[in-house]
Image (cartoon, rainbow, N blue to C red; front, side, top):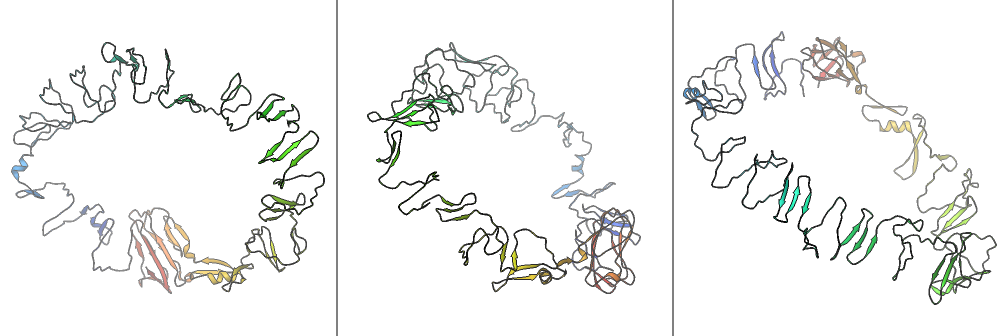
Length: 580
């Protein structure tokens, strides 16, 4: 909603477009003529038109309208004879030479013979009997969900001599009775949903039994079979169970999909009270438990390798002299009950940690963590070298000088990549960069920055604030502030003094109110006062200059008389306000 305010008379050279109601009042605020935003024209005096009256909307009259010869609406010309056909008609009753009007129930009575082509009925039609030599077509597409709501209904039976074709679902014997399909050995469907196949033909294939389906068969309850059953004879899989079912394939493959772990001889997903003989290879995806004490795990036939449980100390023992070889029969571990030998024609590589209780000696050069792993020097806070060349100094001694930190060098320290320091870094003794957050003292503290010449420099925060403050922003001891016009003042249903802020009505007005502009003594050129009206209820807010002040050069008030009206005034010179 936009408003244009000015003092004195307004002269307009273009068209006038009003978004809301428009009214003309006399000097006593009496409305003489009005046009509502809905297009309704009203007035308290005579409205004279010299030419024709043309209206594109509705016209209402509280009195009679008299026409000379006819009423013309568009291309329709209604004369007296035409109007007589509408005079004196009775709703719901047909009369000679009169228009026909339905009653409140859309019915018409006393109509004579009707000659027409096709008759289309959207309601009920009552007939004693309907006989046709052709087809009866029902175009209504209402689905049937009971015996009384489909598009074709009969209270009696339905006899059909020819074939029946049904395009969607069909419900038969919904209330009672039996649906019979066939003759002597017919199949029957009861109202309770029971299907009886009375034909007793035995099945010798998937196409000759008394019940056949080209698709699958889904059964929610138990199945009882009185004689032999052949499953997956041609292909497919027989499933026993649900999510973790066992399956038998047509090729004779048994899959036990239950994933229950075996913790004893009687609780796994596959159990046998006897032994288990497997002609081919066996693959075990998880643990293999041999649960008897002194059990033996044997591999081979001619030259066996045997491991025997010792029944104590969680020990399994290879037979004396047996060899555990790796990659080559000459690379092995063996023992005779006294000595243990690791035999190799090449190197013995130990990739994990090695704890040696006794001494460790080497007659050759030693390389640690050459491919992977970490070499540790020290104990609890040891230094460590990884195979990737990373040096970790785990000692946490803080550095307070150039000779007491956990990592020291008598020379310089060169770092090609980025350096990350989690704590404080002391540079050249006097400049310290702290990692912890610290409240800034805006009048005293400094800020480091990278200068255009690439050198890190510092300047006081107050100087930086002054440099970045723009028009309308003031920097005082490093603190930025803006003009008071950004404030908001609410005024109730009373006279008030405005401030250099956004002034708005916080209550509906019950009488005319005077809102005075601020005194010139506190104003500076460029200050702005904003005023926003609320619900005026037919009253007005007089924005009034004080003392020697003027508004647009006139010592008079600017009135807000529209609900939600707004005005802004700028102090442009001493005692001078202008609307903009």
